[in-house]
Length: 289
Image 1 (cartoon, rainbow, N blue to C red):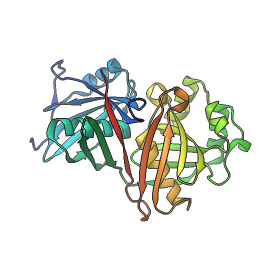
Image 2 (image 1 turned 90 degrees about the vertical axis):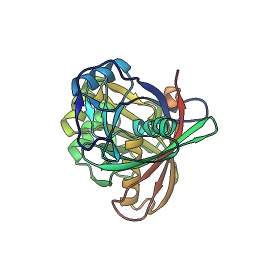
Image 3 (image 1 turned 60 degrees about the vertical axis):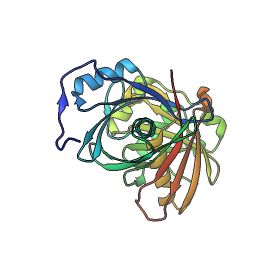
């Protein structure tokens, strides 16, 4: 393994693996690109590759001092952390290196991902960066509700709007009715401006079916993607917020996402009781042709 970080010149010598993270059986999940190479390509090459792949994110990984240096690119921007691409990377590393725990160095955090093969199936679990949440300012909530055509009456009063982080920054809006989640629509350009202005990776729209089961939709206009079918980073941020809000001090939560897109996905989170601590996010992975 190398001891310093370098960037390779633009090259077409690497292979893009395509996997869907948080699959529901043999279907669903969020497609991600994974590039594992000896040296990271330069930024323009990574950005161009992500745009060509066309998935919401592509993860690039190279060995670095006993760990893996990882960067994530959406079709239009680099993002600091991506859960589903990390899960895909964990599965890809398990196929390449064997089952194990892999240490990852991101731009602003160090995390781990576990990858293992279960017969023909692949499963992976990440430990997120630390979490933090705070109430969302009223003017931001007003603008976000207007973006989706929602009103204050559509919100679940048990979970007030919040800004939540778990490696990336998200606005969390909890809706009282599942039907309103299904009706989600917005203007991509207006959504992109709102998200980029406030530094949000996604807006997490969620509905609590019960205390340990949520339904979610995640617009990702900041990255040029209308909606993600499964979002591990937002799941970690949501789990941290649930702990901060006293909704659930510890335990597990399942999140169903992508159902309204016809790409039903399942995300499992494990919440330790310590405030701000890492969230374990896991799910099944299926290889794509």
